[in-house]
Length: 71
Image 1 (spheres, rainbow, N blue to C red):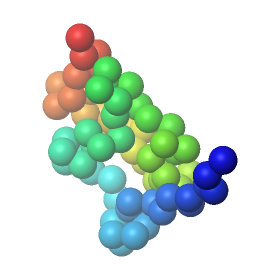
Image 2: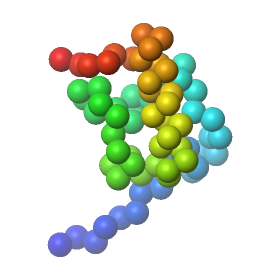
Image 3: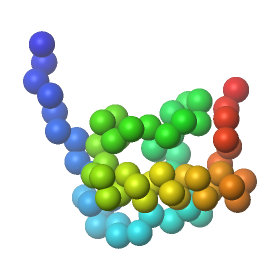
Image 4: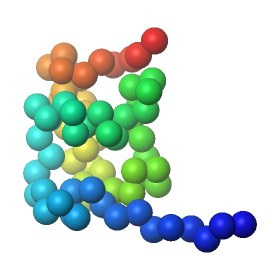
């Protein structure tokens, strides 16, 4: 069994305080190939930024910047 490696939060390490829903390229990092939101266990985001990512992804979907589903 390999030891668990603690992932660091992308936003904390890059000193990004606000997650912008218009930045679709950054938000795609936190989506699966099927356009589902990835959990913080897979992405390594802290709880504060995970909530921001979720809200930003939902807003971007509503504004048609990101897809709801990918086939």
